[in-house]
Image 1 (cartoon, rainbow, N blue to C red):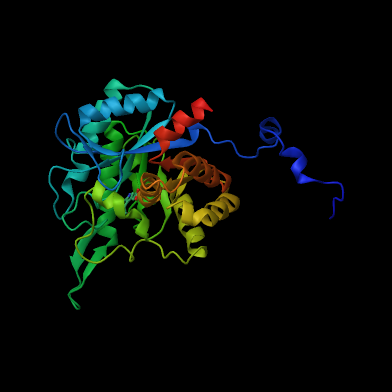
Image 2 (cartoon, rainbow, N blue to C red):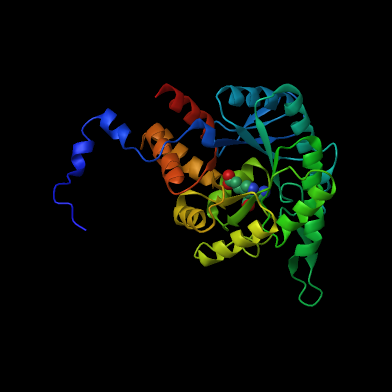
Length: 331
Ligand code: PBG
């Protein structure tokens, strides 16, 4: 089809015209802020590879969450750094674990915010893997025992729900974990607690700074046996369809910027709520370039977040949530 009279520039000559035909509107209501919590009190330790992000203790966390809620951001996602790590990641599902305490403290003190919890073992195991590790009897190699891990993850998700989590978000990438978590939640009266699954989670170098923040780098090997290969998109569709079949309410793609095509594919194919996690490496590389004076942080961030939304994300988990909320309200 040809439109001989069409001149695209006619609608670009001033901001009012541009805003009239704008297709994507980023809103503070799209954003979720990730936060790190550790035991203790009065703690606010800046994460060296993620300037402006902190490890909080539960008391300082509440202040932070209050500020986030007051900015109009609808939710936070919590990551815990436990008192002690062990082979079975016991603090992940302890009633008095760090995340369980954090949820309760937030719920007692701040009313207008959703508390989402990351459900995974890597922050709680002494080896830093996302599951239960055993030795292969024949080869002596370390292997992740998928089905044993499901038991631990289910207990963890249930204990988060009991503590008051509004949404649980399994990020481990074990097969069958959404079904296992849905089952245990339903059996215990939490059939209304939604699951946001990290459905298409790639084995990515962009998680580097997070592993400092959460003190969770694997002590041997890598995560390629359970996280996805960056080259694959059909596999992402298979992962998402399994998670939806097993009961996921929201499906996530992670990281965001190098995987915008995956966000779009999933949105078009399933029509489900899609979350995109703009991960630590995406944050830190912009921050570092900003500190060097190489680019305009605000413009880069707003363009990136708009791009993620345009690709089809309904929800964006981002370390830029607070900055973006301020900029959106002043624009
Ligand atoms: C696993 C988890 C990770 C991130 C979120 N959940 C790390 C990993 O899979 O290695 C990374 C988030 C980020 O980089 O910001 N619990």
